[in-house]
Image (tube, rainbow over all chains, first blue to last red; front, side, top):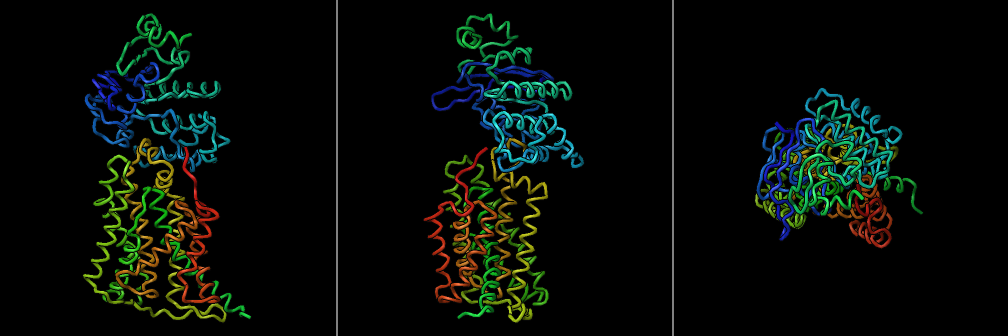
Length: 241
Length: 297
């Protein structure tokens, strides 16, 4: 049983078919890459899967159960956690309060200790000196780190990360990479990582899905995909240069 | 030459009434900061609070248990707020946000007319007072009406509870987070419509509390919420929409200006002085003393 399955998803915006029969599956404990040129429909897919958009057709399953028609918060509470390309943090709340909000929002038992988990996450994100700073004062990279930390406050089944490495300095990139690997290993959580950074995708994702013009164009290892003429012509030729 | 006593007395009565105005403004600004809508029927929840207080004191509990009546009246308005959000506002907020505040404006204005007509229809245009047998309180040589002092103390206690809930409880954290980003809390796994319900209940309960507390002072009649609502909105403009400290500080400021204007200029224009301050603020600082230009992150 896959951690996350999208089956035949379609979404049209006016005349643009943003998702055209997209079928994709992320296995238990798998870290799958999702790549493709700008406008290929990657973020549309993320929004369809996490309940931001209602698909015109198709189905989404989380650990075998359909999550179609559920509200965003219900999907999150079932363990499908996403991150945004433009971080959605609570600017006026401190780093610690952001983490605690994420904790209380999804905690499964009233006994769980949020404070201790927040401490642990502050260490993991290396945001210790900024723990009591409002999130709006953080740099872009620090925000990305905090967003990751919020997602990991309560173990999820599957994480959908939309461009977690875009515009972030190399040091913080490494920290985020380590966090993903560690959560994957410790909790066995699955990941779908949308990214343009081929070096990181190569390191992180054994299997990759390529989207082009709203469709799944190819799936396989990055090296297999790099040999497909259509993918190279449409996207990778430029990205790998 | 004015006596020091008069100045001090004016100061005290200004602060006392200002805190009660602030309750009203806090309700408006709190609902706005969570739901991004203005509740135009705020004065009607004030009115209902005052009627509840009158009925409880006159028919059920008696004047000695006025404080229990206040708690029950406030709780009653809170419950009514939950019901109004569930029945009238939630369906609007389920839809995409485009025309949301237009709908919310129409719905709350309709609610205003309906509740006001209902009060006139049921209780008639009469003025009631729950009365108060609280003794006059002497502050130094100065006598202060017992009902006003009690209202002031009660309001301060309510403000403290409000602050403590926001600051120290998990629900307070959810409320503060929602005021920062509605999309953010939904992604985190919080049911934003449920947060709305509680926020609307708390917001109108603050108005109901003001109504119950001021019932012996400003009397009970179908349109008694009007003046206080206007003052609530004046305070919100002065303090800045969405700012809680702004509502408190501007509330006391308005109380002081009115009471000094009434004592030292002309008491006939008591309700006008605040507008002068509003105009001044709009010219000098259009976002209010603590208003924000926009929100980020």
